[in-house]
Length: 449
Image 1 (tube, rainbow, N blue to C red):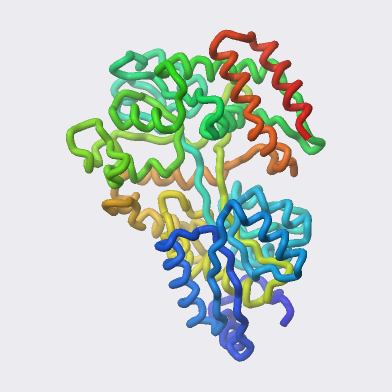
Image 2 (cartoon, one colour):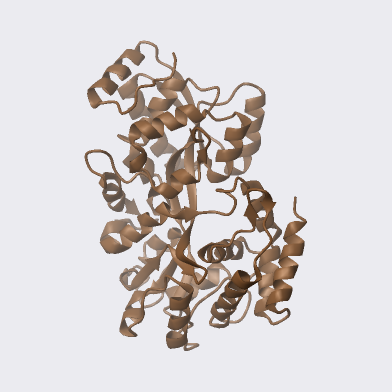
């Protein structure tokens, strides 16, 4: 069958199409990197529900994330791609360029669901000539986590800018009772790379442009270096990464940290392996009630700020049974979307907020999904609505180095070299001045191919 071209199906028309397709049912092969047993079970349940509604069967096939690139390339060469692939951001544009993905099919799905119902940042990161490489499914944004109660008592504004963070440090840094920040300083940890990319993006700085490496501007980088040195000096000594930042914040000894949303259930005492120690009850949700978050964060050279985001996509492949695959993706993003998000709600923020009947339908449903490991509770019962809105809203402005410029591969090599980590650490330790640090970064990064 050819592609379904009419946009914005009414429900009656969609039902008719689904019933017609039952006569020519397809078997869809769906590759997913959500391979943990409980997550697989939820995907298989959704696939069964879709099969009952459409007549098309879905074979859910787990693939390790580390193997996804090589397996997909090999399957493409053999003409044996699956129909739909759940994949990370890094593959969207390269696979579209290589002909692995069906751009037209993905674009049709986005338009039929309603472009305006998707988070703008998630769509922009998959934008290609002619539409979208893949359909955004879920994502998360890195968060600046802070003690809102302490900020409020001190009359401080939310730490949504370099300036507000530094003002807060000046008022709140009182070690060992309270460190102003716990910055990432362990050079060989990916955590430091991730935090630094967020801080660079906040000031409007990327190491790449459309032509490749983009030499750093001394003035903008000096602002970044001075800010990072200040938050590092307000941190405990030592080689710090995610472990120390979580432990100190959970003990009530840190005013601010940068972390992923996977901390949200732990903050509320729902995971025994990472309990809050701010009081004597490791199952208490007290720390969650005292916490605020910021996703969009700005530097002096970029007042609009930026959020560091990670987005996952459904790619419809060039070898797919196109019509059936489009229907499966649409189902997974509409009738089945709450099931899709329920696979791991704390790390799957809804990139599609709602539908034509309720623009916030999926955001509201997501906030009521239970999170946690040893105990369960919905995020909406743990955190106030304005915090839920901030969490979800970060995906509107989510960015990553190299995506908009078509240089994600080069940006990834630059990050993985850890040269930026190392030189920033040298600046923190007083081993180089700012002009020397910028010169060293430009020399090292410019040599990466």
